[in-house]
Length: 191
Image 1 (cartoon, helix red, strand yellow):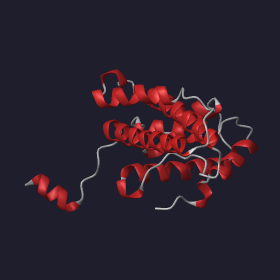
Image 2: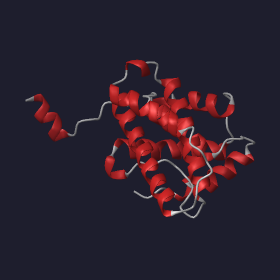
Image 3: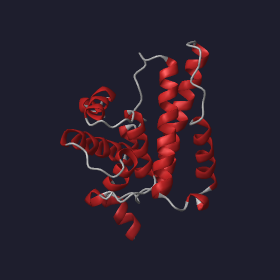
C-alpha cells in the first residue's frame, strides 16, 4: 500500500507552517501513532482531542490541516491493523542527510512515547516485552544527531528504524483494539 501523496512530509510541513504550529511533521505522526498504539478510541473522532492537546494546546486546526491529519490517522490505522500494508514511521526520505533522518527518528520516538503515555495509563503493568521496548525507545529518543554519513552509520540507522517500527506494532498489538475475526475465523472460534 503506497502512502497517499497528500501524506508526504512536505505537504504536512506546509500545512503546519501555514497554521503557525511549530511542530515537525514527524512529531505529529509520532504522537498520533502513540495514541493509536496506546489504544485510543478510534470511533467518533475520540482520538482528535488528545492529539490536539499535544500538537496545538487543544485548539482546533484549519480545515486543510484537519483533513491531512484525518488522512494520516486513517492511513496509520489501516497500516497498523494489517501487516500487509507495511506500517512505518513517517520520516524524511533517504535523500535527506543521515543526521537529519536520525534527528527525525529521535523526535518521532519522543512524540510516540508521549502519545502512548497520555492514552495508556497501564504502561507499568504492560508485558515485559513492551516495557523493555519502551525503555529502548526512550534511549533512541536521546540519540546523538551528529553522525557520520558512512555505510556503517547508515546500517545502524536502518536497524534503529526497523526497531522503532516493530516497537510501534508490538505496542499496538498489546494495547490496540482486538483484531476482528473474519467469517471463517468466527465459524472456527464458535465450533
